[in-house]
Amino acid sequence: MTPQELAEVARYLDDFSKQFNDVLQEVTKRILKQQLGSDLLDESLSSSNNSSSSIRINPELLVQQQMRFLEKQQRLWQSASRAFMGEEFESVIDPDKSDTRFQDKDWQGNPVFNYVKQAYLINAEYMQELVASLEFEDKHVEQQVKFFTRQFINSVSPSNYAFTNPEVCREILATEGENLAKGMNNFLRDLENSPNEAFKISQVSVDAFELGRDLAATPGDVIFQNRLIQLIRYQTKVDSVYQRPLLIIPPFINKFYILDLNQKKSLVSWLLEQGYSVYMISWVNPDQTYADMPFDEYVKQGVLAALDKVCEDTGESSINTAGYCVGGTLLGLAQAYLEKISDKRIHSLTFITTLFDFCEPGEVGNFLSQSMLPVVEQSIKQKGYMDGRILALSFSLLRENNLFWAYFIDNYLKGADPVPFDILYWNGDSTNIPGKAYLEYLKDFYIANRMAGGDRVNVLGQAVSVADITLPSYHLAAVSDHIVLWTAAYKSCQLLGGRKRFVLTESGHVAGVVNPPEKGKYGHWSNAQIEEQGTVWFEHAKYHKESWWKDWGKWLSKKSGEKKDRADAMVKITDIIEPAPGTYVKVRLERF
Image 1 (cartoon, rainbow, N blue to C red):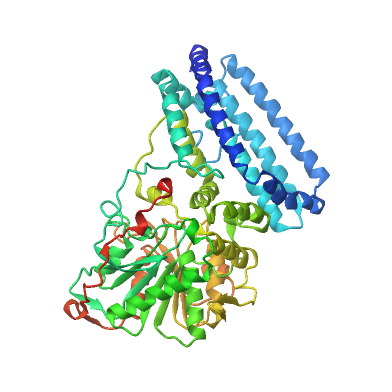
Image 2 (cartoon, rainbow, N blue to C red):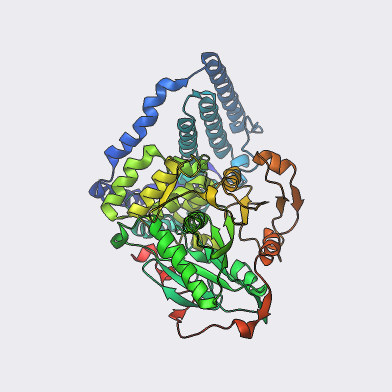
């Protein structure tokens, strides 16, 4: 890109500045009008600031870091000077191979952009080394400081600004600035659909898919509903089915259809093809009228109500169950409660990326901590619920360059429309959580870690512990999971009694779970022994180059009884409320 072209880009940006400033003022007015938690945020962060006395700095190491920083800056200036004289630009520092932000040819070939890139990388490296060299007494404070330092570093990347991103500059020239106008419209649309506390960036259009047609399209019926759930019974696909049905409890912080995307990715459809009778909970998207609903109502009106209906619908005295993420946590609490009252209607348990021991919450713990509690409480006090869009932003910031800044660049700087992608559509289809339930979940599990600390949790008037569980259980974790660390899932598995099987899939929290056997994309590790340490378990585990679905299918089939003719398994149709996927799942937060 020539100096003349850069000057032309600057002219377009200058012409567009008034419109941009008008929008900035609108955003500022909105924030000031809400006045949400500015003092509270300062208060919540003060706990980290007050810990500064417990942070030690090595002066000698600090001097060494500063000298390396100055030496690299000097080399960069010298290299840049020679490059502007027509010589080759020496690379003082290169981005990590996994860093996709600087792949455009002009980041290397254009001296201006190359200099901006390397200057940024040198400063970023210095900040990261500085924080890494600090010695913290409080490990949680250390994790928070490192996490938010990374957030700051990635937010100021030159790729995130129009004038310092060569791809955006070329787009401005090609469209004569039209991309900026379109990007501003995209920004205003997202602003309109965002809560005051957080900004929800579109990863895919809300109209890209239709539930019941494109996603969540496996045939079935809603056969029960209460204030909290709809229960879906799916239509069997084969001539003979297993005697014992399967009830799936998805997380209530997301929609259930991650397990029923299109037919090629649907775990539900695959289970039906194997001969299982499948039932699925679909959670309500709660509003302020649910404010006082406690956490254990998700056990009572969710898991236990569904259990009652599945047993009634099939005539079976016991069923198999599976819980995903926090749905698994609910399932574990429900079974601990059932053990307490000697109820034996659950035959086996499957826990998919589930925590009971919250000692390693991963980076999500930076948002679900004691220091952030005042801000959360203030937000809930105003609304009556935890806004699902705030949680969605928190999860996106765990992979900020891929799930936030990449869309910031495409949507607002380039003015592009998001590409339809089913998993990202689901990812953006968030659900609220009742205020009381969320605070109890946050305090009892993420902050107090009561299930792992020897304390019992009160569930429907009973003091329960997952250590009392005696049923056979299957536990799946994902090796690259950034929400439920696999080592934490392993520790959670160890808390339970009964015969246990632990399996580790490749990939992460979603892609590792939604892993159809036909594609064979991700394999898994298994080890029949539950070792004392997860690392020891992994050392002795055997790798299988196939989906974990097959391993689970073998395990589940042994817990499902004999197969019977589909005609013998037919159930009444008088209790059908509506076709699947039902109405609860179709309530989106943008339309609240």
